[in-house]
Image 1 (cartoon, helix red, strand yellow):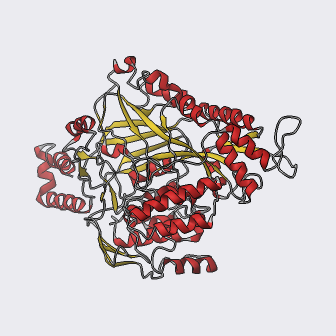
Image 2 (cartoon, rainbow, N blue to C red; image 1 turned 180 degrees about the horizontal axis):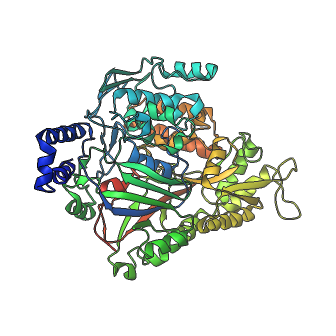
Image 3 (tube, rainbow, N blue to C red; image 1 turned 180 degrees about the vertical axis):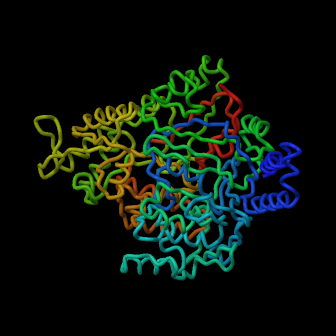
Length: 619
């Protein structure tokens, strides 16, 4: 505005003495008043001014599904959502183990009633990004936006994969959801006793039972604040119109190909100020040296390209078309030395390597509603157990994963509350025993060497996968493993988003997947097996009364209690006895970065690390 005023005065009053005399004092006063009025109505400049010349080029190895926080559950969509939308709470960028901190809440919530009541105080002056849905008005974030956003998770019409996070949890919300199922329309204006905004900046959540896990829910991307005006304006395609209060805005979306995020000019900004984490001082000290005191965000644009093929991603990085990359498995031999150090040719270019254990688990899930592998009778349990025991999991870790995966016994990884390093699984690799199990339950081999069902009908396993190089390696490994057992296996090749949709409908027989922690607790992994979450996060449609009883008991206990940790062990045992998953392990991340990338550290929960990063000038 200062520059605009200067330009007008120079143009109107200082182009020559004659011009100045002709305009006269009355007109000069009019122009000055007009400029003052424009200044008063113009949006206030953001606290942080990201540099539009700083463009980060990064990549997703598979496509996204969309950008409505209540409706998507895949990692890549939520990585984008995380930069656009804000939650009540978030995580400290450097703290390990992961630590919850305020985001748009002024402070951590007031927790009373033995963990049943949470009161959050919302920061004032937090605004949504400009959008036509607001009809030219600045739109401040209020507590009512969180009331609306949380209600959306319970709306039956949305079929939110995160509905399980509110069902049976918030006082009065289930009744409104039940009424919506009968009427066909969710009443967003209906009062919910456990979800109220006593004033513009206060949110009160009252839970039906003690639940200290709600802190993690408040920091989770599905609990992001959306504006009702935006959702209603774009009701036909909310996935394509994300409007949040966060540091970035989606400005370009080519579905399954490219996403461009530009810094939100109305974002309030924050100052980079984090403390090093014990054990990571060497890496953290450099981050602090590069970043401390900077107003964030620094990066003006983030260009995300979808590249399915390992070779495409690797070449793009080496040609400086990508600024950073999680090294694909098939190129680890080029990126790392045998002792997992950075290859000399990369080190000579001042490329850096960040290695960290992912907070994830990779597994194959079985569809319990499938007529071949599903069901709970002894013969079906035996089939699933045999498949898991016959899979060459050690070869996956060594050959396909290039040694960048650690073996785990539980269906939860190290680094989360509830993990027990002394737990021993019941379904280790043993093809001899697996064959005996199949023989015992009547899965007989025919003349072609392949087994049939006990009733003599065909037995063909169908494994959902993709067409990338690494997925082809997995298919070959599964084919060899099942040949060892005399089990015929076919591969259903499609895009990740299509497989995900089919899994939600219990239509995939077998599917290899990975789950990265949304919060640092075993609950986040065990909920993938909880019966009522079928159609949401339970992609195997596994429903065990014994497992569900254990899970429900765990939700009523304090996070660090010994009794709760024992329940997780019992849950792990139950799902393995039933043959719910074949667990492979937990992956290692090998992130390579060009020397102009500053501030990167892989967070165990957060995915949009670029919010905390910077770039130096570079080619």
